[in-house]
Picture 1: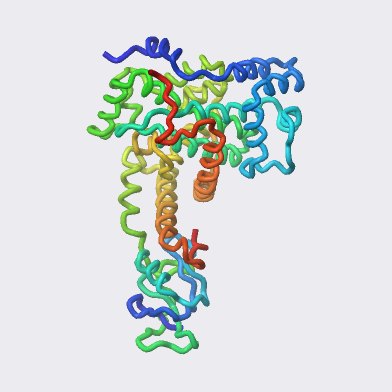
Picture 2: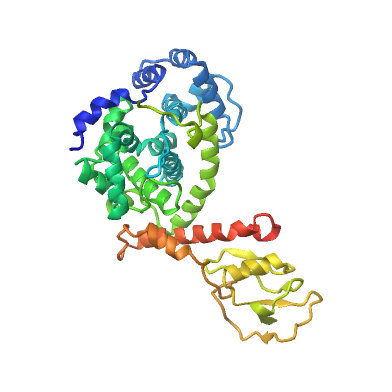
Length: 297
Length: 134
């Protein structure tokens, strides 16, 4: 009998947690009275985080027109939300890892997540969304529930993967059969535990069912399409190798023309390698096969 | 202007019309001198024939006179998608429920173009001019 969702969630306690600095940053950013000085003081308590933030904002990938040399400057130029999202980006790189096995490769899931993040950011720009960074983080995290299931209920997750192989199911359908719930629901619980912003949480939770989103309808639609494009381009693997069906409601919400897809997909492919290299360089420990982070004993 | 079947092409000939793949991606510009590597690329795309002259501009023996519009559309000469691409894309999209959805059909078409372009780019990465195709 596979663990119930509630049971799985209890074990989330043994999963990697966001650094306390980031939890405090989340609190401060959601408080309208927070000043840039307060926030930068908290960020700077973590030297490594500070260095990685500055390295990221000054990388060609982000392409800010001039060099940014302090946290306060970063906050002034980019705003609280975007800095919080950049901090999340440099942090989750460390958390998305796991031991490679024959059936499941966290490395390929990581690549799929980067592909989805890049696709989400490209789509956000094209759809005129004001916060590309939030979409980038949502893309990185959208499948984090799979990692939870892989880490804390490995035996059952192996059954899921077996169903994917033997009956050629999409992973989410196989999860429903084995667990009775799927990684998007698990992702929501982890995001809540991490105290991520509500809209980001909902985006992760609704990436397969963007029609269920209430606060983050456009964001969920973007991640839904980004996931499809990342799979269509064969960037990494989400545990199965299939492109899931497209929600026509999500597509219409984005008001994109089908003729734009060629250019968008070329751009996504072009940015993918660069993003992957950049993010792996950010990681404290590279989530490569030889040096995996192992979260659960 | 002479159309020359692939099997009669030789290194050193000069293209008199650009060659593109079926998706319109430029493989080689007009005026380029053909190398053995270019011929390999044409073979991998199953290019049937191209328009070319000998390096000195004269018409090679065995060339057929241009019969007007031919091949695969603007700037293109008939060729096919490299082997394996269609199978791989069909596999990726087996759950996608494309049906009559023009959006999903376009995503699938573009996925094939990207994969074909990458497949094409691989063998010529070290060899200059054809890289423009990417």
